[in-house]
Amino acid sequence: MTLTGLYNVLEELRKGKNPDELDEKHREVFDDGLVLIMKELHDKLDIAVAEAYGWPNQLTDEEVLARLVALNKQRSQEEKRGQVRWLRPDYQIPRFAKSTDKQAAEEEGSQVAAELIAAVEQKPSFPSGAVEQTAAVFAALAAANQPLDAKGLAAQFKRTKTTDKKVADVLASLARLGYVSSVDGKTFELRRVA
Image 1 (spheres, helix red, strand yellow):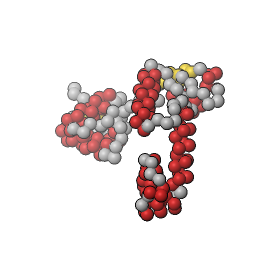
Image 2 (tube, rainbow, N blue to C red):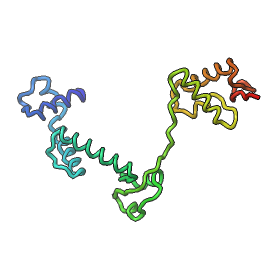
Image 3 (cartoon, rainbow, N blue to C red):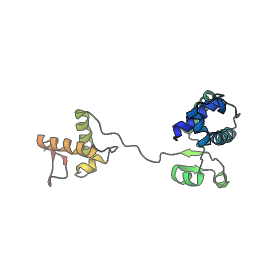
Image 4 (spheres, helix red, strand yellow):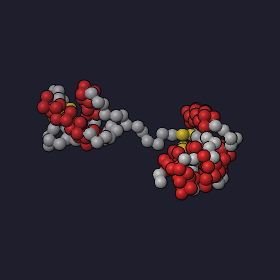
C-alpha cells in the first residue's frame, strides 16, 4: 500500500467511478486503505478551506487556481504599497514591522495592516565568470577598511559550498600577479601605489 496507490484510487472515485467498478487491485487498495474515509476527510477539508477564503465550496481545480493567482497578485500589490496582512502578528510585527495599529494587533485572531520593512539585506551572489569574480573581489577589498581573509570576503556574498574556495582562488591569483598584498599570507588588501 502506497500513498500513490491510495490517491490513484481516490482520483478514480472523484471521476465518478463506483467502488464496485474498480479492478481487483484498486478494490483491494480501496478496502484496505479506507479510501472512502480519506475521501470524506478531504471533502471536509476542501469545504473548510473554501469557507476560510470566503469562496463557494464547489469550485473546480482550475477556478481555485485562478482565484489563488488573483489573490496572490492582490497581496503582492498591497505589500508593494506597504500594507501587510499579518497572519501571526505577535510573532511577525516585532520582527518585520516598524509601525502598526497596536490595538488591532492585540485583537486575537486579527489580521493587522502595517508597513513592511526589509528584515534582511540581500547579499549579492558571487559571480560565476572569472572576470566578474575578480572584479567582485577587487570591489570588496577596495571597500574594506582593513585587510580581509577569504572567508571575510566570501561572507559579503550569498554563500554556496564553493564560494570560500572561489574567493581564495581569486585572491591567490591576484597575489601572484601583484595586485594584492598580504603580510601574514592569510589576510589581503589591495596593493597601494605610491
